[in-house]
Image 1 (cartoon, rainbow, N blue to C red):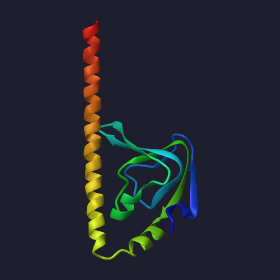
Image 2: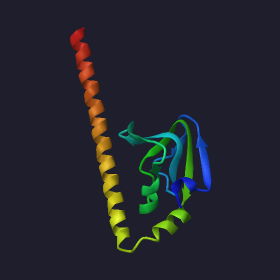
Image 3: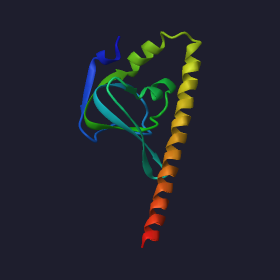
Image 4: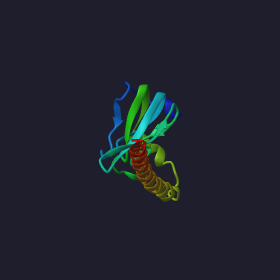
Length: 141
């Protein structure tokens, strides 16, 4: 089955939340039309982690590792996604050999840690830029 051939499609408008960080995973999604923004909340600030476009998948990490969502996903403009339900996802995952499952779980955990670290670095960079801009403004006065 091609990911775009999912039986359920959902439509979202600009700014609509598709996935909420901290909620248990029950679906993965493939972007059929449009783009989405990935954000994480760190130290009471929302940090943009990246964007995804048509053909890309999100929400898979939580299904693989059976954990809560690690990020927020929102629509940029009009977005159509195909829904990959947990049952279908599990059926496809069960086709993998037993030896592959621990490898995929390890990759997901490493990606989750790396994304968290990069988000914290992005936040520190943003804070540093704010301090530099503040200092520059004071020097110009």
